[in-house]
Length: 335
Image (cartoon, rainbow, N blue to C red; front, top):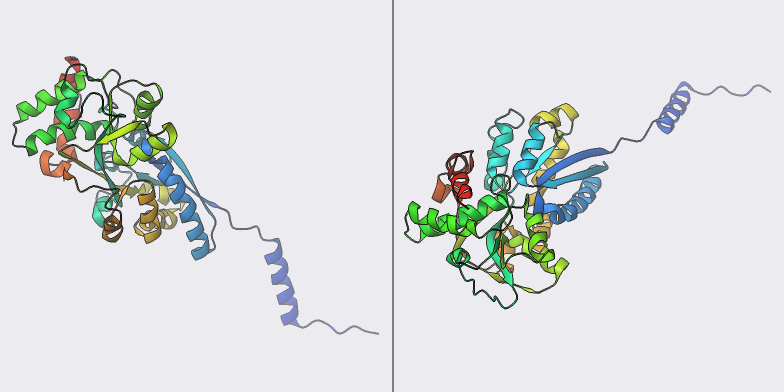
C-alpha cells in the first residue's frame, strides 16, 4: 500500500526542527571589570546579582571576570593592553588617563548620572582599639611617635585621597598652602612603608600589626573588621575628602569584542535599587537619597570637600602634586 506523501509545509517544519535541534547554544558573553584594590568584595556580590538580572531580562548568560589592584596601576595595564570591557575606579584621573590614549571617549563622565560615579566613600582614620595614641584629627598623625600606614600616592587612588584629604583639611580651615604642605610632609614622614594598594596597606596594618593608624576609605573598614576582628576604632576627622567612584565603558575594547550592549547595561544597573542596596551592604555611600537617609547611622554626616573644590580638579592636582618632580616627590625625598 502506498504511503501518503508529506506536505511541503510539513517537510519544511521538520527540516527547521532538525536545524534548531542541532544548532549550538548561544555562547556565554564574558566581560572583564578592571577595578581598584578594595572594591573586590562589592563587585563580587554585584556581579552575581547582575548576571541573574541579565539572564532574567534577556535570557542571555553572562560572566563577569574581575581584576583588582592599585587604581593607577590598573589604568596603566589597560593602556598596555589588558582587555577591560569596563573600568570601575575610585578617581576620575585614572579613567581620564585611559581616555587620553583614545581607548575611552572623552565625554565618558557625561554618559551616566552623578558624573558617572554610582557610589562614593570618604577617607577616615583607623586606629588600634582604645585609640592609645589619642588620634582625633589629621594633625595628630603628624606628631612624633605616631606611625601611619598609607599606600603609595604615586600609584594608588587611596594614597592620593589621603594626601589630598590632609592637605585640603588645612585649606578648608583657613590655612595656607605652606601650612598644608608642612602638615602633609610631617604625616608622610611617619609612614614606615608605602604599599602598592589599599588592600596591601590593610594587610600591613591589620595582619602584620605595623603602625598606630591606617588611613583608608570608610568602605574598607567593614572588610577589615570582618577579616581581622573588632580590635579597632574609627576616627572621623573634622573634615575629609569625598572619594567618588567613577565608571566607564572601554569603547575600543567593547567595539572590537562586540560587548558594548552588555558592558553599558552592566554599568547602568549600578544605579538600580538592588545594586545601591548592595553598595550599602559593603559600606559604600549610595547615590540613592532614600537609602542614604535610611542608613544615616552607618554614614555619619561628616564635613567633606571634593578634589574639584579645593584643588581645581584631578588633572591639576596630578600635575602639581603627583607627577614626577611634583610636591609629593619633593616631600618623599625629605623623609
